[in-house]
Length: 70
Image (cartoon, rainbow, N blue to C red):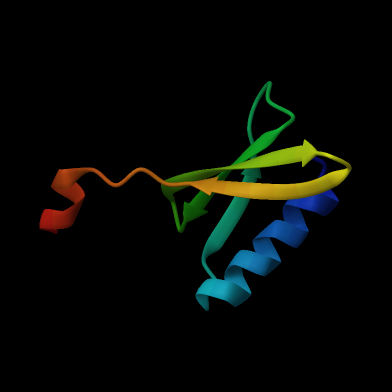
């Protein structure tokens, strides 16, 4: 993903979740995905999917049981 695409995804996520501290950052050595942070905390990976001439993005977020105890 290039810088323009990352910026668009970041802006979208900030609007959708009403959270200005979301950051979308390129992954080293990976061109089809980016990391999503809230502040300094890593929270998800977003994958680009080019299929049948259409582009979509999939957000994958793992929630650990210990995270629910906070």
